[in-house]
Amino acid sequence: MKPDIHPDYHPVVFQDAGTGKQFLIRSTITSDRTIDYQGATYPLVVVDVTADSHPFWTGTNRHLDTAGQVEKFRRRYGTR
Image (cartoon, rainbow, N blue to C red; front, side, top):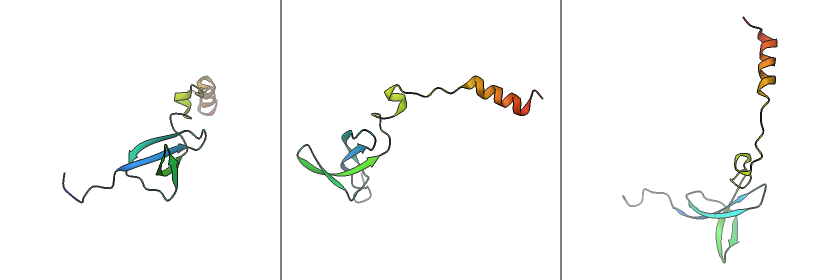
């Protein structure tokens, strides 16, 4: 690799805004906020959705009423 062209790649704690779950990964993102995590201080990034709160991974998917959508379309545009 060429020296001095790559961004700083360091450990960062990401926190789910909805559940509060935290996990430590390496990233190039920076943050002014810090947190003590497992005995060390890391930058903290709060995110809206993670696998801990995403509907697909938690099993709380919303099912669309596709039959209702089809009927709404047919009422609006008919069978031209």
